[in-house]
Image (cartoon, rainbow, N blue to C red; front, side):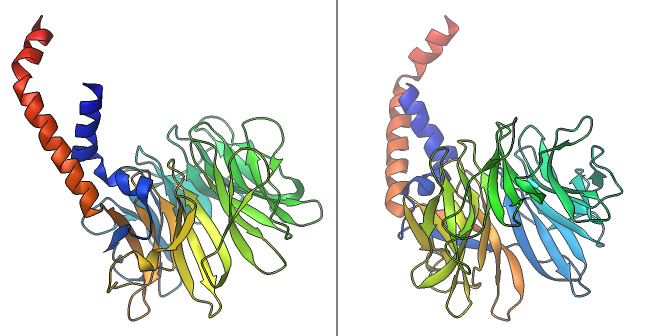
Length: 371
């Protein structure tokens, strides 16, 4: 009975998860233009939760920024007033974080920015990520007269916890999972910058590089897998994956390109980011089942947008990012996996068979429950 119920759940409510397990060159995506807020000229989508809620930033012609929330249908909603706000992350409870007037902030349900009381309001700060427990991480200036910035963790009570550095004067936390593991980037004492992992106590763990001078971690999933970027020489980055032991793994770049950057990873191990070709054109990618694919080749024969960057991915395989339309105007975009017809057909056939059998045994099951 457990197996039959799993099939029902898969087909009725979760078949969108299937493409993440079988993503390949045959997987396709539908593209949704999230639009623009009135008076804005461009937008990018930074993060998406498992409920399909999206946060990001729109840009005015004046250079001002406006954080937004998109909830799956209808127009974008403003978060705060159009002065200087950005939306960076959202958890599965719908709690969004970012910054407002150069200060880290959470956003209330009505869009009102809420300063983080655990940070000194005199100094600039940002909120980069939030987990499902509401723990927020980011970076804060600790001295207004010199460049002294530290990664922090804030749980909502008391002062924020400063995480220190790898020996230099700068660190920034960019990702946190539900176990409280934190990743980001920090300067070393010699001025180079390296990706770090923080496991809740002790010093930051230096994740190293791919042979070049620098690296940076962007995201961590609930299995402790870390993604980011690392130099392979003085000028070129590759996307990397760290799986909890050994050195970071070079994920490479798209064919014919020289520069790559991984921004997000979901709990299925699917990784998204972007890569740059010799003509300085950016291509959003997904890395799955050991291969990297250009998302522009997976969105149908006549896409309306060129997808430059994929910045977030949820556990259903939905991807958010940005790209220009035919006029060059940059829009926030949502990519949703389209189930392969054969997979969906088999799922429906299996469901019909299960329902038929379930109907025959309905009386017996009801009787057993009543007893």
